[in-house]
Length: 299
Image (cartoon, rainbow, N blue to C red; front, side, top):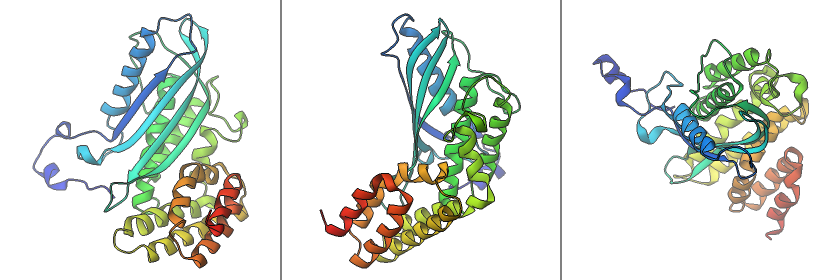
């Protein structure tokens, strides 16, 4: 896991000297908006950037180069009033692979259940213990999910603390009128994502995330054969979990982040390893089944 600089804590060096947890690129796309002054959305973009990048989301100390790479693209789809908007948010996060300049995608999700209020220069207020607005609740939720997934990829179930924080936000926001926070709002929303992650019956998926990244990808700088075998074992772990609880949002989002990476990874694998992986992949990610089958034909 990312290093905590204990010596500096013991010598009393303040946390403010170090970078925060996230390195988040923020874009607000308001091309469809015709009535509201476009300057408002530039102000919103700056406010979200500061909200995500200057707030301390974890208890750990990150060097600037250790900050978690992520991006949020908010596309305004409709003006509901002068200060209320309907939008969708595309959220992506990545983590570095040891011994390379490659970043592996951990999260790639489009959240379509997103409405919020915002007036120009309105401060983005947030409190972990209280729901204040749908905008800041959504941003904080994804900050904690991003950190939780990152920590899970470095240590087995290392993200527990942050997933629990995200779940607290879901519980608080479920009393609001906003969509995406409740079980009956759909099958792919904020409620179901964190609920799946914390459900013991999906614990195998979190084990697979650790296997895949820490024991697989991070070891490829030295030898590719054994790490690819470990990645295949991670797919087997996913497959076992999926057989018990099929079509979970957690599994679907794993492959929305990993399908292209897996195609590249197994393009260099042995025929036997490809065959084993493709049998898992076509069941787990049927949307991309044809692409996986091409690994066997060499197309």
